[in-house]
Length: 119
Image 1 (cartoon, rainbow, N blue to C red):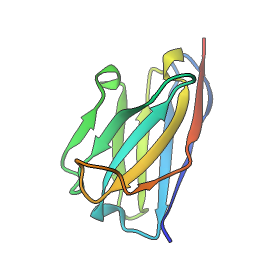
Image 2: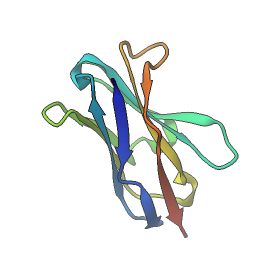
Image 3: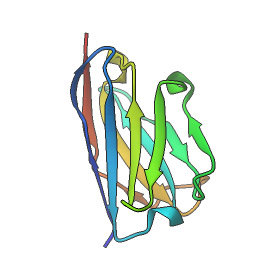
Image 4: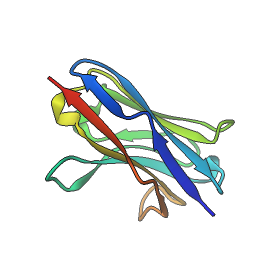
């Protein structure tokens, strides 16, 4: 059974940093492409960052380029999202997702972790 469990969310002041983790079980992360999404209060879910299956390519939504970094640790079977210079508008529930192919639908989703950025 595949499980993706996000952690690392919490309350942080504007300008601070958080690192989200997505611990995977039941699959090998290097066999999948990975994406982070977020859903802010009252808004649709949006793509934030992605990493290709071979780990060679990363992609970011324009508003987080240079601010967020996606990475993975194959030995720990965990994917990360390093978030720096956080702003109140980054407040959202963050979800990790895995897919066999970077383009197309994601096959597995975590339940999310809440990030709240205060002024």
